[in-house]
Length: 282
Length: 282
Image 1: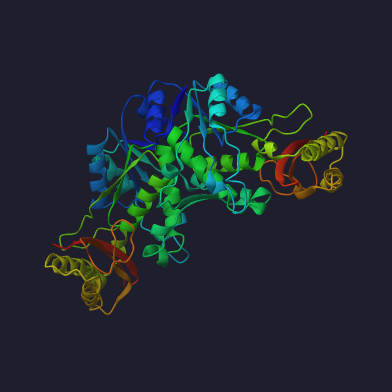
Image 2: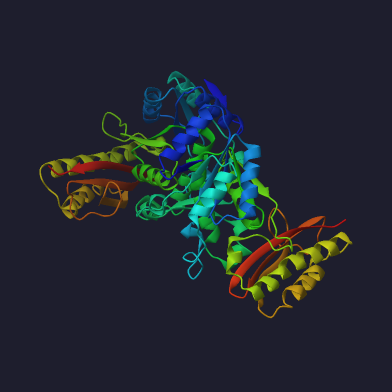
C-alpha cells in the first residue's frame, strides 16, 4: 500500500492510473476505522481497479463546541487495517496544504442541507461538500463510496455531483451494525457502559417503525409517536430530531407512500448519535 | 469542428482525448465573438493538442435588471469564427441541462469577490465560479484561457482552482483593443456613436496613469485623481469604481510599490464598461 501526503503527487498518481485505463474508487474517511469503513474499502475493491482511502479529519465540517479536537485518531491502526483490506493508496493530506492561509472558497448545497443535521449543525454540510469536492479533484475517482448511516451526507454529495456535473458515481452502502443493532460509528468510543445500553434505543425504534410500516401503517405521525416513546424511555436520551422524510428530497412526509426514511439524531449522554432506516408500506 | 451539446458526450470526449495522451485547452465564453475571443482560441491551439470553446450565456452571473435577455447572440457567426480559428469542439450546453429544476449548488469565493464588480453586482462571481467549475468538470481541460479585461474574474477563478485543488492551469491573456485603444467587449455593440467617443476615456485614463507611474509617481491618490478627471470630462460617464489595487489580493493600495492594477468600471450612457491596466513604478 502506498501512502500519499503530497497534493501534487495524488492527481499525478490518478492521471497515471487513468492513462493506463484503470478505474479508481475513492473512500473518503476521517479515520479511526471500524467494520463499516472496511466494508466500504472491500466494496471499492470489487467496483474498481484501484482503491484510494483518504484519511482527513476535516475541521471545516465541525462547528464551534463540537468534537474536532477530541475526535478519535489512531493512524498506525488505520494504516494496518487499510493495508489488510487491500487498499492501494492511503491518502493523508496535511491540514495546512488543504486549507492554506488565504483559503476562501466554499460549496453550498442549499435545499437538501436545510433540515435535520443541517439545522442542528450550521455550516456542517458546507464543510462536507467543500472537502469532498476537493478530494474528488485530487483523487479523480470514477466511483466514490460512502456509508448510508450519514444519510443526509450521501444525499448532499449526490446533489453536488449532479449539480456541478462531476463525472463521479456516488455509491451509498448500507449501515454496518454491531450484533445487537447499534450502528457502527467512530464516535461510539465516547459511550459509557450506561450510554451503550441507551444507544440501542435508536435501532430499536427503527426496527419497530419498520415493522409497523410493513404491517400497513402509513401515517408518519403515528409511527413517530411510537419511535419517540422508545427513544425517551431512557432518561439520558435527548432527541435532536426524529423525522420521516422523503428519501430523495429529505422533505417531511405526512404519509409513507410507498417509501420514507426514518432519520434520527439523539444525544445519548454527551454523545450525539445518528441513525436511519428505510420504511416501506406494503 | 465538432459541435457538442449533450452533457454526457462532453466528458466522454474529454476522457477519450486524455486516454490518447492529448492535452485539452478550454476557452469559456458567452459567445458573440470578437478578436479578443479569437486570440484566446489561437492561444489555446498553441498551448494544447485540442481546443474546446464553450458558448453559454450564463443566467446565474447576471443580476436582476442586468442585460441577460438582450446580451448579444449570433450563433451562426460564432460557429464560423470558431471553425476558422481551428477550434476542435464548440460546446453549447442547454440551459435546462446545466440548471435543471432542482438545481441548488453554488460556489462562493469569498475575499477576492468582495469589492469592485463584486460590490456592484451581488451574486455575479458566485455565478461565474459555479459555471466555470461545472465547465471544468464537463470538459476536463488541462488549461483554461480567459481574457484579462475581466481581471477580477481571472483572479476569482485562479483562487477557486487553487482552493478546490482543481488540476487545471488558468491562463489570463492580455486585453485586445481597437486601434484607438477601446477594449474589445461584446457589450460594445450597445454603444451609440457619442458613447463610443466617451468610452475612449477609460483607455486614456489608463494610459495617463501608466505614464505617471513610469515617471515615478507612486501615490495612488494622486493618480486616481487624474484618472477621475479624465473619466468625468464626458458628462454621460458615471464612475462605478476607479481604484488602484494589489494585483493578487485586489485590496486597495495607497502606494504603488512596485506594482498595482488600475481597475475601472464606468457607465457610459446606458452601458457599463470595465477595463484595467497594470501600473509599475520604475
